[in-house]
Amino acid sequence: MKNISDKQYYLHLGEVNVIAKVWLNKKEIGTVWTYPWQLNISDYIKLGENQLEIEVINPWVNRLIGDKVLSDGGVQKHYTSTTYQPYNKESPLLKSGLLGPVRILEVVEKSN
Image 1 (cartoon, rainbow, N blue to C red):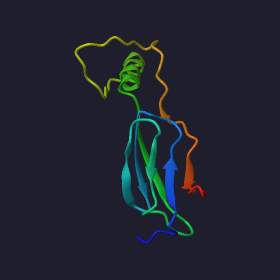
Image 2 (tube, helix red, strand yellow):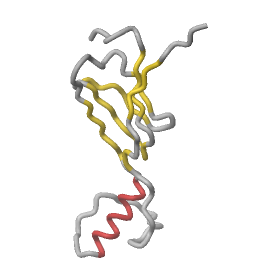
Image 3 (cartoon, rainbow, N blue to C red):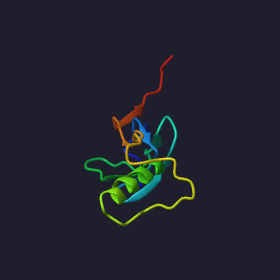
Image 4 (cartoon, rainbow, N blue to C red):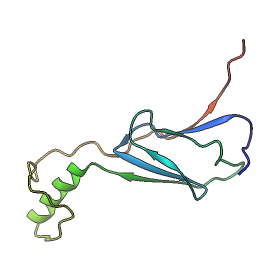
C-alpha cells in the first residue's frame, strides 16, 4: 500500500492492560504489551476512511476472580484451571482493557 505522504504516522493506544493486537484496513499491524503502546502505521493508513480493529487480552488474574464469582453464583463453567488459587470472589480486579486515549500521531521533522 502506498503511504498517504512521506510523513510517519503512529497509532498510540494510550494505556493497555495487558496486550493489544492491532489491524488497520484488514492488515495485521502488530502486538503491543508495554509502554509506549504504539505502532508505526505509515505503511497501512490511507486517505479517507480507514478500518481499525483492536483485540485486547485482559489480565489472567481477572479471569481467575471471574471464575470464582461465577462458580459461587451457581454457574458451573470455568474458563481457567490452576493448582494454586490465591483469589476469591471478593478479590479486587486489576485494571484491564484498552484505557486510551487512542490517537494517531504524525511525526513532524524539526527544522534547523
